[in-house]
Image (cartoon, rainbow, N blue to C red):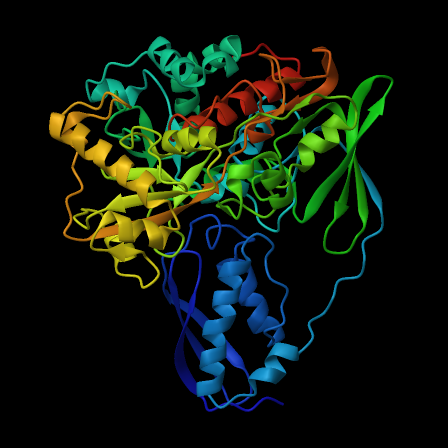
Length: 563
């Protein structure tokens, strides 16, 4: 029997977004209560759902009096922080920490392999999956939603919670002129011939309608913003708390969508991974999946169709680094489940799985969190050459870097920066610092003559006030004149991949010859072919078209008139 010094103790651990402070109350023999006192964790990932760690993991620790409770797949960092905080409290209470860590918990018996039947089965529970699920329910269909992780939401739950729309009621109330055609022109300018004009034009003309639909499901709009001061008009609609270049506000739509789906009788299968699609008489009629916890299989037969919303492959390091050499040692901000499973399953039955020559490339200093976001200094490749207008949306800077093939970039500054994270990066011991460019180049492992020539050219453009090389605004041209020079290494990062399955305007998946595969539909990152060019042009675009084609896929599967 465990022995503790009765009382309440405080501990802390570090989750996804910082400290989690926990109070643990002990009797002489057991843990009687665990309370979260303070945290900054993600709504819809750490808390807010019946499967979230705060609601699901902590009660099990109390129930089983064990720190060996299996962690929630997809929220392991939060679970580890909880264990760390509780461990501190156990020690302070005089308890046997090792005994708690090694105390076994009941293991559910392996399920029998089973067959389920429904009208529509959807794989993936991000905004694409949930919009498809709710729209299918509105069409009168029974729906099973399958999620690979132990918690719903996928990449959508940890994103910035932003939705792009043109001509919305919020814009109109603020006197902002924006039209679907203006939005389409913006996207076309960014993606060029990569863009599927008909499909994206369809999205643009329904973007405001989709936003209103999302609001009707329980989403709250906080305000409007531009993703970058160089991009007007303001058409990014923020969720509560989600302004600026921040992550972790997607729960603002995932949580209400999840709750509404379940209220309407929907079924969610967690910890269940798609393995193959079932084709009968030339039509996709279902899919086989595996329970990742016990290895049992579930065959789901779908009378109306299968909808793939499984996301991209940004967490598949082997694939990303093989296809995109400039992404060597990259950082990704997406769930581990983003492995490309859905596209591969569709490819196995003849679907076209397009390998786009680019993916979202962002630049990030991994020790400080500083990244390209309106910094007005000089950014150069690994060999010291300038390659773009630094003053533009971060993903577009990354896209220009990708064209050079350089694995990462250097941000050169004299230390007069208005951004706290960047200033913090300048204080770190491994940030190269020197009194002249030649010395700085040596510390960067760059040829001094190349970097010196690059800086001289940049300073000349700053002094003339006109960037004839890359058209950076004159107001953002600031010469590098010392007395000290710093170089912050910006590592490649990604959360969105391009390409994947190709769908038509009705969200039907196409085969390698451009023909519809009956019974198979897709939306979101798994079907990004025709959506992007060299980079992501704006926040909220990926989510916006995932929302749109999720709804379209459901209506198409159910034989209803499209939007």
